[in-house]
Amino acid sequence: MGHVVRMLSLAQRMSDERAQVCFAMRADCGSAIAAVQDAGFAVRPIAPGSSFERLAAEDAADLIGIAHERDAAVVVVDHYGADREYFAALARAGIAAGAIDDLADRDLRSAGWILNPSPAFEASAYPDTPRENLLLGPAYALLREPFARARAASGRVFEANDHRVLVTFGGGETRRYRDAVVVALREREPSIEVEQPERFGASEMARLMLWADVSVNAGGQTCWELCCLGVPMIVWSIADNQRMNARAVGSFGAGEDLGVWSDDASPANSATAVLRLLRQPQRRRTMSACGMKLVDGMGAARAAREILRRSFA
Image 1 (cartoon, rainbow, N blue to C red):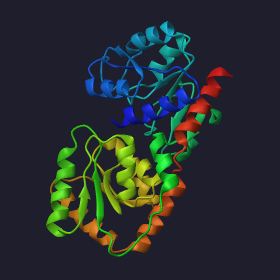
Image 2: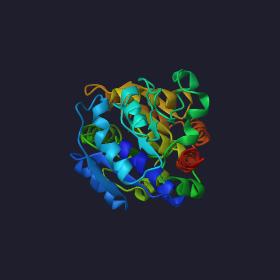
Image 3: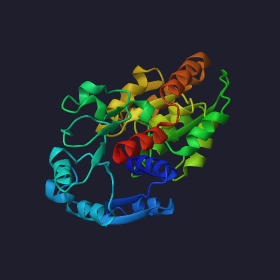
Image 4: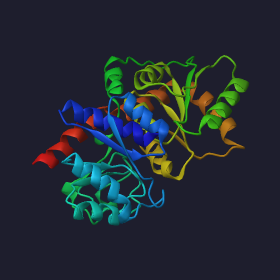
């Protein structure tokens, strides 16, 4: 669901720039399609593809048809399975297409441009792509507009008796991680206040992040939202594609990277780390400042303007 969230952020900012936006999505992604439609955007279904892990050149046929039908000036592709062959097929069809990425683990030289908001990567991660075609770093973090608005209204303070904890591991099948952490926290310290959102919208999530003194979360898109609002965080990787984000959060001082999730040990380790961090207001203050310096909440607007400038130059 993180991919849908960040693409919605970009789509809204493109709409603000008077662009007409349509989503092309796998026909079997019902909940994701509903989220996009609820946000007011049109959706055209496409075939799932020969493999979810890797999109072959022939898998681009539906997208090419939709792009030609709508006379699209630019196509933005956010799929870990899209690589050189897929983008080459789009280019042969006369379609200007760019990639949203945060792994730098595949050949994307056929993409017209690459946007990677993770602070973990520099231009050397894409040696075959000209530097002018790279939009790199947290300046391009694709956050929803309510987070930038909430940041302007925040007045976070840090005290030794703070006790409010946000536990969120994203959408999809993640409830077991969240529930396990909540149980461990309440067993260790019943006085702690815990919020565990499941399907809150952007405005509600921003409000909860402003409320929280500490967050326990996965290493996905949520990390950049928490950084924007200065929430100190305990980060777990529950998927391989989250490791680089989690490490970046730790290395830049915005949170504590506890590594790869383990059902046996991670709930108790989460509780220990949270209680330790709550007793360290100065450390949390430093984490908060590092996170807010890293992500300012305006990345989606920057990305939209830059992508559209390239498309209509």
